[in-house]
Image (cartoon, rainbow, N blue to C red; front, side, top):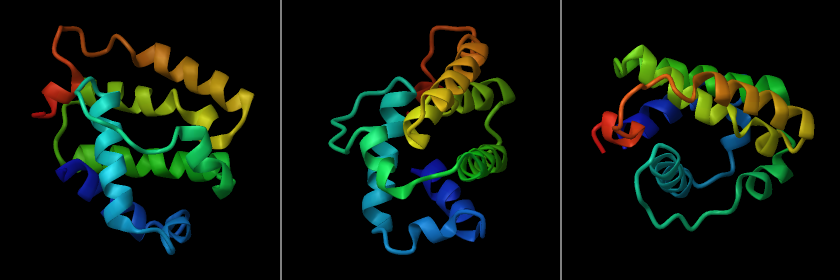
Length: 134
């Protein structure tokens, strides 16, 4: 919960991307983000949101906006003093979704390369969700 709150504080203050969120219910978005991150980081949740491509297609997000979101995520993780290796693994997972968020095959290939580069960075059996206290 703390990560999502820190993250959206950064996002809403970021003039490169905050207009995407002007008409969105932030409590609902935060709930979906918590569910998504729990699943993506190895925890269990009953995620009831749309798929990445379907949820983001109407927004027509450009690569620069996706990159800004990732930068804000890195800032939030850094502010929370998440260890570098864990932070890098989380960023790799998010990067692997680039193609779905951008709605492009080229973005998917770039995201997969980022994910494979950081996928083994944690190096033990604990899930990222557990490493973050979940």
